[in-house]
Length: 398
Image (tube, rainbow, N blue to C red):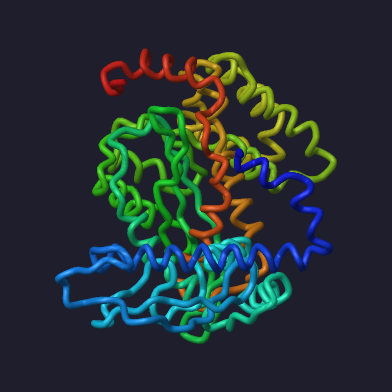
């Protein structure tokens, strides 16, 4: 008889309520865990139950242990050995929560729930208590994951790296101050996006970005073909100091926002339409002509906005040197801004963080949640890769 035949509709009809089904599953889980524990002890001792061995260490009965699982609280018979050297992986000593529940706790924390909210959620769903201190200990273990992740080797070449910062309020010396999480996302040669790291510093500055880029280089990055950033003062020069051959593109969307900042309401629609003629132009020459028309029309009234286009022209229009498919993904930092928005969604319940470690932990976990769907290459990857291989033939090998 096939396994699926055992679980037919007649089998499930024996349960009169969801509680009865849950009790049955709890018993199955209990038996399964206990059999796994016996198997772990067999491996530890080096021989199976009911066999004999020359090993002086042997089975020494069982101890009862209450554990918390996704099906509720249960009592397990945990086998012991004479030398007390057996420490099962499934339910380690001094640990009463099975890994599945720990994963649930970490996932809830990643989605922005506070420790007290998680405590209440676990109680309501699983019908047992987990203290806030236990929840803190479970989520604190993520710190080791962050260290390993932050120091992992990186690819030698990234086709594009988007960079941006996100500001959080953090307590420091009894004050709440703004601190910036610096985020870099790289596009690999296989078309997949990868978050290269998280770095915590004071308000966003080109000087701190220098340390970020230097860290990336120390972890194996030899070349970045294109960077996409906001218009932070000195950012382009900083990139050129570390990766001198990189093409630097300032985010056009940031430029539009900055240029429109001081435009009065009645002019905004026409002003935005005229700027659109610049960045939607088919060529760099046509864009320059559109800028000249824009300057003629608006210089007297909004000289600051016109100068901001003129002063950053080369870095604002770098995308015109590439085919349309590449232009679409480098002329704006929308990709990383969307990522920041998802991080904000998961951390919005935390008005401020008590420590630097707390904000890094929350951001890292939110990042893990936000990038779970990054399993496919970007759209039109075959076309885009071929374009990169032609344009950067001397720097990109596939």
